Image (cartoon, rainbow over all chains, first blue to last red; front, side, top):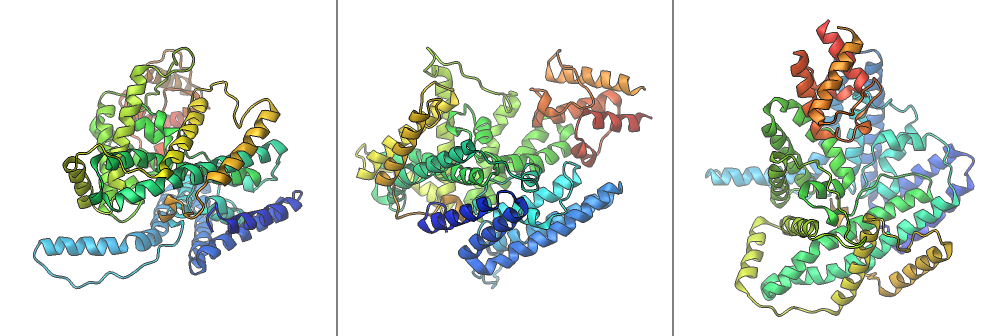
Length: 482
Length: 80
């Protein structure tokens, strides 16, 4: 049941009505939230429901025990129990996501050494959302051990934190510190919150069905038959792919955040207009923020602390390991590892010249236009990201090389044209213009305005455009597979 | 060394590393209160504090600090 389907709409309307009938009793609302989250998960794959419930119960009790050790000042015991908890939490993820990858990689290694092995890999079905809820669970245990959180005594609240349905399949990955207090207290929902939530859902829906899915039709048709296409068509599809990824995943995130708002729960932001980044480090501070924050807190900072006496070399090592983890988090394919390594290596010049965490402020010319220098840096960053995503998208490293061979061998400016692309580009530029307006806080009234009439008209227009021009055949989000 | 004196010296290290003379630390200061204090400068600050007081923190210790006050307590315990 994906967020942009009719079945989800029916499901959500029912949940929303029952949920708000009990607005005085937040504990009953919590039970409704939990049951609906488990129903949502079971609807996708009922066989996997015991895994998420089992892990929730396990982490609930281990969290209490870690908290107990902390309270008694037994830091060493708390540390070792946290380590054990994290390993236990990661085991299902490693098994379901990487088991076959380990087996086939070892087989490849042995065959390179001239040894033959006969271990067959077998089909393992990946539980949906496992990469996301595992990270939520790990975050809970580590935050208790770091004295940043007291374990919750309410198992229902904890179970909602793990399985909150708008975020269950693709994030954002909320930290427990901000999420749990919202569940453990009465929600105070105003009309403005509901309207804002609705606008976020609509905008996300538009990004998904009018931009991402339209671009996807063109891009898929080029890449599935790249040997038949000219260099110009492949280059266009490559340059558009980051846009498809962005509008797909940011669209989903807007919908998840909007659904949260309708239920009175603030979900963490996941994107901050990444294509206005002026270098790769800034791009990663704006792209899939909840994942990069998680990895910064639990991978990069601990590693950087461990290597702290190595100076810049320590930072470089920590960042490269961090990005290889980012890469492989997406799946069991060497292309993801190469993608991560590529981004890690791109940080080296930024670390050496001290620009890694520098904020890049832009002063607009005449109040509206980006000056040439930052504009150039944004385009360059976009192209660097495009190259990385070409590796990311390809089924194998060999395919990436083949695609490049095709680009350089089949020189032609003739472009494969599909009518889908015209509308896709129009909607893409409208969306980018909204990002531009939001990034530089331009005084243009659209979706958000002090004038309520303009606000409501733009919402109605958005619904009309989305219904008329949306693609409703393909309805899966790219990030569901991770 | 008095706690107040440790705080004063830590403040100087912060001003030096973050290149900002206006920083005024207190026990309750956190990274959110100082613009230049991010994930990278955090580690630089720790290295410089360790060098200044000739002490060594464990990673576990560093990761559990909630604010400057808890860092000062760690330093206080080590130089006693």
